[in-house]
Image (cartoon, rainbow, N blue to C red; front, side, top):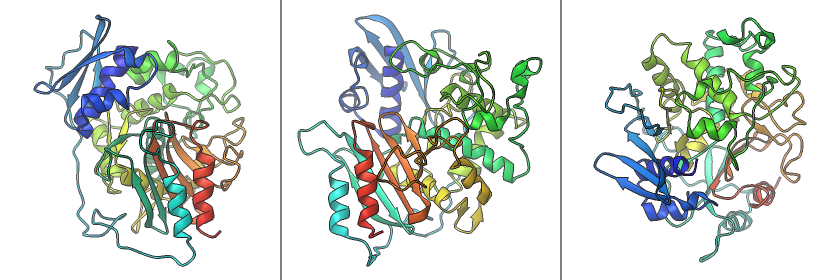
Length: 420
């Protein structure tokens, strides 16, 4: 597990974001036990090997267009592979609808001194390693009103969103539904479930993490999620063979295996692997100008929809704006308006914490932030927070999460600076 995490992390950070081995080991891999690994980068052949005290070497490879993939010893990486077709739409518009620099806009209601102080307080002072924020961006009424990066990061830095990728995966079902190609209320199309009680599980239940299936999501030990991410060849199958331990729509349980199962369901909606790969970009990521974004694949060629989405901070913010505007992107309706309400409505038995592949503040997790806030969330405190009542999106990327990092203070402080 240690060498698997380490080799995959170094491969992604080095080849996707040009980080040095030293930077990755002192940042991304500065985790208890993960820092035991010794890593070696092969730039010529684009792979990384990791060992712990000379034991159990693991290798991760980098392939342009697919990102990094942790491979098993018997993986044949000489075989040809499909790569997503990418399209960069040049609109000659400023951010967010283009890649030109945003125009300065001053809003009379904003206390800019307070806003700057709140954002700066999210970062460590020189020599500290307490808050470990890498970037913060604040978008109000489609305009960037604050943006700050830690040393070594900038607006072009790709940063791993971890479980924020789940929100991307879920969004694709909203797009298919708008296109009339998928009904989330029907039983999930899983052949292995047809002849038992699991046949009652709908795709809606999976999107809500409310299937009733067994799953252990514990990153501190050998568990279902760590075995899936660091051993499995096909991550879409990890949840399939799990038994029911509760009733569908009545047993909320957070599961990365469920999201990768959803990625597998998406793959089955297309006649070819190439169409599946292209769909994520042509219908969502590239269509919204998230051109830096990449979702990495497993050994079987499935997008790891639970965990491995990378993008710049500005592009993560575009994803938040898509939801703030209820699926409308510069005049084009990417998914139905009702989908934004669907993902931000509390899931049964989640105590107001969770919607459909999005987290919610309806249950008051962040007591001083607006209750209508919903957000994509990832390991170590990645967040894209959407505030419909304030026309606001906040993105924070870093290496510390709640409660070690004061999200409540950051979010509520920014909202207060708007004078609302």
